[in-house]
Image (cartoon, rainbow, N blue to C red; front, side, top):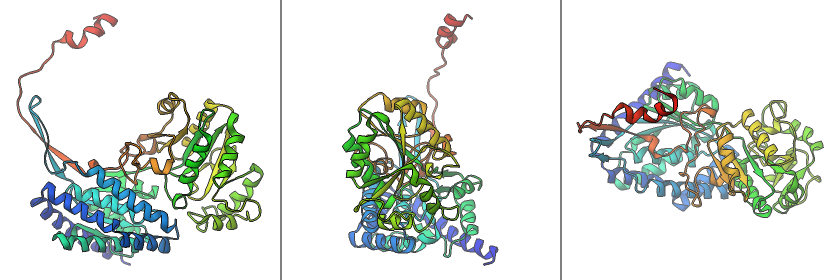
Length: 469
């Protein structure tokens, strides 16, 4: 298609979204913003629609499984709605008479959201709800495989909007078929770009000239030390690794086990359906998993029996195997198993002690996934803090199933999100979970107050005493 025509199509969508947003803001209220966000939440959480969307996601992308996507759509949306329930995003949100500063919430305008095929329903819904909560319109650019799901989700949202007399043009998508030219144009003309998924899209968002929030690549490593509850650790890792066939960027990609408990942990992993394969099997697995230099699309986020067959492991793993753990030593470009695999395959490292395990985790982060997260299964209260002080990571997940915990959980205090900022380590502008506060800005009304100028010795007294005046 002619590039000019593609650009015109995007411009038309954004123009209509901008007009809708102006009306939304002009007659906005906290009640209206909250109602619209709840409508979008119910559009995905209503059980029959949730299941239909989950089935469509698996059918059109070939990734994950229906039951887990139903769970993900429900829990991620419910958790987000809990998080935003009391958030003030309209009118005066802070007033400090002592400082003479009053803060007024203001929308950003039109949000451009680029979303991945791995979560073609939950991620768009998360972005939509956050945008509406803060008075914005939103235009989505889904991955090509996610277009049908995105269109269906928007249709359900508009059905809910009709019930509350809300403007349907507040939520739109780039006209299909999507293309790089259309996504690029959307990034350029929106007021904020939010990008989850392809690191190429993240880089393009940051260079688009539009304020942007991108998130980094995953490659989660998890340490199991000699103080860990091995049965609980194995159970948590298995539950996390197998959830939605490892579509999450927060799924474990490497497990690093301290030597003192290695054999016992391997046995525990086996009881949870993890087949441990010796290093001698690694070359054949790598050859099949990266058959043409890229991850085999027939293995990515597929069911265990498909992965086992595709990797030529029939008869080599126990019946009932749910995931694979391949004994590995190397880290880096020459060792593909040390990177993100988006499949039911783990790299399994053996470390002499905790310090050696920490060093392996650091090498894995330097290779891929810097800033994202690491996990630790341990009874030692100091070791998580040591990891937090020394590793290039924004999250240390302690004694939890990693993919359930990193993006927010009912059992921890992180915001529910499907997009994890990775800070400067991951080349990102945020170091926290993407949440509603990133979809809002504030105007500060500043009034005069009595002067508060300090004396010099109040500021420099301690320094002068130490260093001399």
